[in-house]
Image (tube, rainbow, N blue to C red; front, side, top):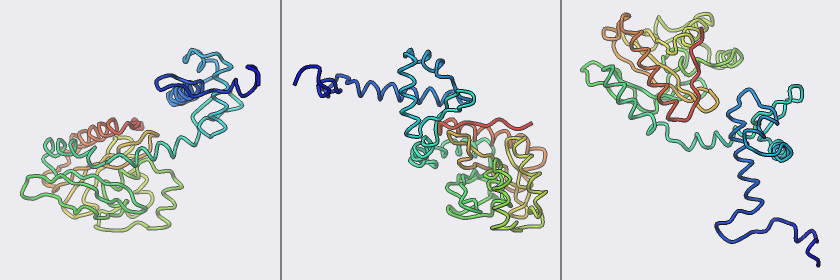
Length: 276
């Protein structure tokens, strides 16, 4: 067999510490994928190649490989390349491996210290918010929820925070499945009230539960976000209405929203700005 045979031109493994052609291609592909993730609106082939200091032909081969595997997508009309749908399960697996409680709890303690009220962490499970963690207030009269307790999304502060970025169709499906449970006379009873509460939540960056879950208790909650800007969980403070007065609510809302933004940052997430 001569030196010009096909077998002799294939990439070969080399001794430890050296880089084969195959490893170099993988490294370039991963760098290209990270670069695509930074260009949320998409990027042209020529711009990507320039940023990576690669020949356009090499960048195109890498993009075509990523596209075939579902990790890159091309808009044929604009010529813009974006990350593909297969990046979603990979990122989700990473997020599932993160411990939200250990990540959020130090900031929950700071939130309780700053506000004097009980702080809570909750995630969504179907039509309910489920409490994962709590840091109790030191006050004699304070809010309390057991870890694992479930509350309807539409009549709790953490629930409304978890719903704050939900689509119209998602809200339609939720109401069709679970209705609008009533816990107190201040609970949300109509789609109009729900829509108004979520609009206010998106505008302010936080949501207020004014005795909608428990008479005499108020809650201020805010969502935090994952890598794709989706709501990952919600954090809140809750306490008696006599301490969470109407005058204090805006200040407490900003405090909770700021804490949620810091958790988003620690999670490597993408904070969405309040809507005007």
